[in-house]
Amino acid sequence: FYGCYLLRSINPRFKGQTYIGFTVNPRRRIRQHNGEITCGAFRTKKKRPWEMVLCVYGFSSKTDALQFEWAWQHPKLSKEVVLPAEVKPKNLRGIAGKIKILHAMLCSPKWSRMKLTVQFFSSEHAQHRKGCQTLPDQMRCCIGSMDQLPSYAEYCEDPADEQDGSDCLSRDEEGTLDDEET
Image 1 (spheres, one colour):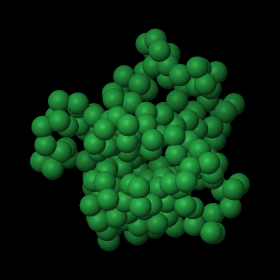
Image 2 (cartoon, rainbow, N blue to C red):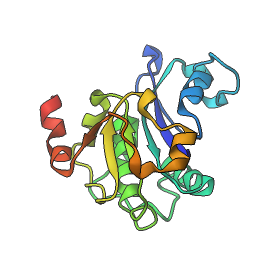
Image 3 (spheres, rainbow, N blue to C red):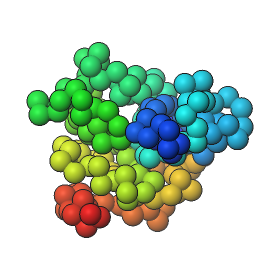
Image 4 (cartoon, helix red, strand yellow):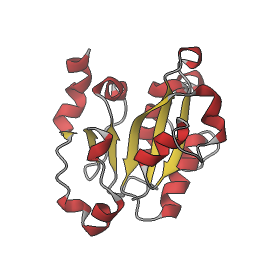
């Protein structure tokens, strides 16, 4: 399992602060960021506690996932990220901005052929997809708990057989999700 994730600070003093990272174990990683266990990222220490908004997984290698993480963290520097013209630099901040960048990246040539899954951990955050580019057909977008993420062992067996009970969003539902949630 190789995944990239988006965190949001739930500390009222740091409203709107986000963090993008890479992990092989999202359950352990969020506990590290929140200081429950050691080895959290130094940049997240002062803005605790954090919640994980989403996880993108299905990368075939650690290198692919780390390249994706870097491009998501540095969209203006990455040659792989082509943002839609209507996206202004000030709109790249916060959860909504990071999700816009994510969708643009997933539709770019480097990643559009990969069979990736975007799993939101709450429908509250999934609503930020409104107005984003539609994901390629082989990609999945779903809403589910962190417990529904595949473990490393499960993922190595056959991700195509994955029946995790999460609420998957079909192409038709992707466009209407935002209307239903507001």
